[in-house]
Length: 176
Image (cartoon, rainbow, N blue to C red; front, side, top):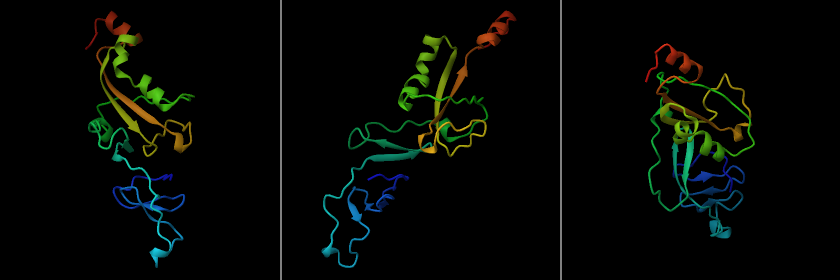
């Protein structure tokens, strides 16, 4: 059953589409219209179940572990995603694409390829994931709320590059 809402946090979880309710083991415990007075007359079918997964709510997302009954490792801590820090310069941009979010994450947010592939003198990457709960006044929404994906990268510039880098090196101001 589709939920379209946040995780139930171990409680009975109503499903908005049909309003069936499931417990934390995935068993259906209530079907609207079934007798609540005399349950023996119309019991909830034994096969009315949903699969369950280990979940964690963090950084504005519900993370789901579906690889094994228990996670093989903890969810990574991304401290910068929890705190707004004035020590970072933020660059915002938006673009339309016909690719999947997974492809963007695999390529655009691959910190290890920046220096060897693009010769960018940057290090100390931290990835932030955003959701539309975060205000973005300078960026026009490109997609419906249900299809929106936002992320950011905080990184350290080891030295100036591009036109500013050429000027700083010419003036002997190259900084690390």
